[in-house]
Length: 210
Image (cartoon, rainbow, N blue to C red):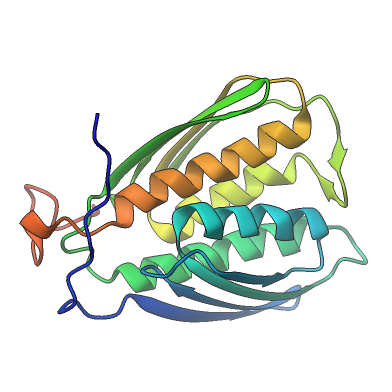
């Protein structure tokens, strides 16, 4: 099957966005360029989360800059969840009314003994199905239960129906990393512009959402 991605037409407007999210718990700035080259500059205060977001940028080819200051003296929950919200909001804004996009994306990502599947619909109808289990409570400086919170927050803010399932795996690092890489590859397909439908909403309704 040929899954080569269409080239973005030069006449299409730039798909970039910046989001600032400031609460009593976190201060976050996110910049995205959907038509980038996978460059990243990530600083969340959580080293393992930084590593996962670098993978997200690299394999989706979305340029991503993240600056997060969170209440890490309490724990990593607010930092992780709010960063997912802000990245999702930035992608949502950069997509605009989603004209011309592929809309759907999917990926199976192997990582040594682990295999993870992600299916994605940029439908503007948020939903998360999460079938991922861990055998450890922490990875690096982050609680493993917080990865579900990140994916939930991202799906809600991005307007994505998102199914994430680790089919099998043992190493917890591999499990998490394969989830982010699979999301990245699915996003890469879903946000790509299809030259056959430039200017068209990819729905028989004429709109996405609702």
